[in-house]
Length: 539
Image (cartoon, rainbow, N blue to C red; front, side, top):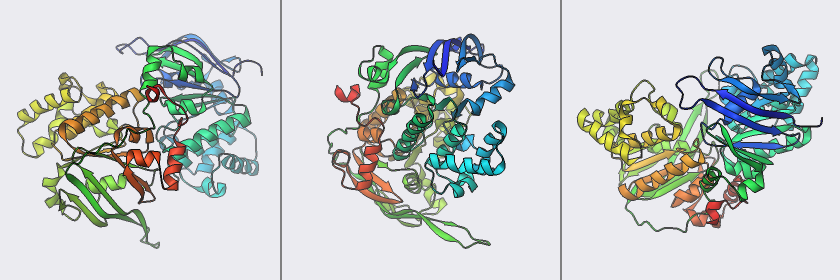
């Protein structure tokens, strides 16, 4: 057909009364042509996902209301289409890939059956024809052993494989429009590279127009034909990808691009601190099976040696399943190691009992990936902050006074102490989680993917905060991440893990500029947008 696959004209979506602004999306214009990838970028709250959900007719009833404009799919107005017509169009002419496949897929239904459901509803194919179509689409998305994958449940697959299942479901009917809402945010760099290559390949093969929602400019540089930049519900800039990336005109776009971490590390800085944390031969083996089946060992961590000095940030990078988070949880004694030593200033805590561990708990604090789940939604920020110190004998009034000071240190207004987590942005919640950890006066701070879910601008602020904490407090920081750009900018030394083992380690500058292990080279090569020099790198 001639003309765009998707045409959005002057769209406005109203927020509920009492919101911080009137419109979630205001006066929005955008279009997607066949065989074109349009990336919509912006911070959380900019209206990216609301735009995607409005196009799909998936807005929550009575909460977000389109009040002006039009949305045309292949020339058909869909903004005011009936529920029945939208059901026909979804899957048939437009489809969506969500950010988190584990919540988007039915956990009690086999993956093949979930794809089959799409075919049963939208086609008249018989069972044998549907089975053949399912195997064919699984092959198209490069899943190994399509027959086995079709018989598998979602929990039996990796994150990258689950995302491929979502893409297979979306593309099985060859829709004209594919909407991808942050589909690679939680994936490691190699899986992310594979998914991006797959989207481009399938888009070329089927002539699909793609609306790709992301906050990652590395992804934008890798796949976008055109870019739409949104801020607080409005488009502030749009145009060809190369023009936006190389010559951004709006200050907000320049700020987003400047916040992208460089993949080139700073020259190695000698810290020369006192060793605070060291692991020797750290191992963790899980046992699976048993009862009526044969039990077998699954080694998650195999003989890991690490050292972190005072005032030093040491990163652990690698793909999902490499053992990064297992190492962190063993060090924090959230799980028990199978073998090896965990030395805190020379004292081994690897085999201590739960009772004996109590005085050491406050010495190691951990900041998790998701600040939404890390804070109790039913407790005020103040109650969450003082819980640890009070449990260790500090008077509540004294702990509360220190909590107010700590909030100021991490850049959150002290009045936040009486508010609840849902009243803060993701970046503010992560700062509160960092404040909670620091209130315990730890010697070791573990950041487990602490910035991976944040926008690039908020991510830059949290990384600056961690740098300031390291400099002022002299903490030893163990930084777990799959984002090589982040590791390059914040880590003094880095350890690369694969299948439970450290395959390469050393000063970050040396490892990134002259990697010796082929796996390390593969990771660096897979980083999205690696060939682009963003403004921060050029400045």
